[in-house]
Length: 204
Image 1: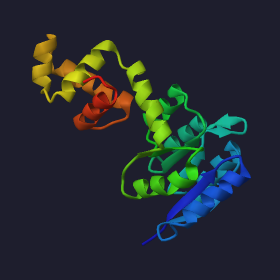
Image 2: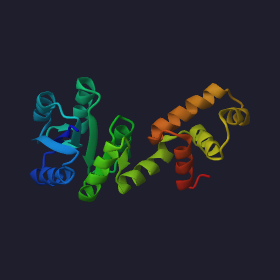
Image 3: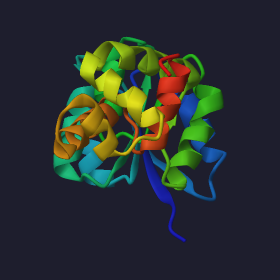
């Protein structure tokens, strides 16, 4: 079985060394093919090393992870990205989580969470550090419209699209659109996950 090729992009040598150590603990699946400390070098290495996985710092010298992520999308959308950040700013976290990144890891817990994120990636899942998840959950209440929260609460009761539409006096298609928007904003994929979010937020 071929190994997943990992490129580490972070402007702090100590962090890069720590990330490399954690990746090497899973050497049966992953191998580090390179390191970059700033965006220009990172873009070069993405093209020359053709990694399948990128560990990407949000704060880069003279740039941000968003710019690198946009390049990755255009160059090879199949590359899976794990973002590292110290930020708990909801706008930043929601932008990443609504993009194709597979994990967001807090720099405050990256040593414990890097293996979890890599194993989630290996299994086709997504991963969030706990404080990142809490920040995104909190942001979800802020970014959903009143109508979307109303729909989310009805989804949590197990009602069908048709039943919700009848209760709100609109079409099934309108409810489908609301549900799609809700899931996109919350970074979830199923009605069960919407229901779990509603319960966690005390909205049920």
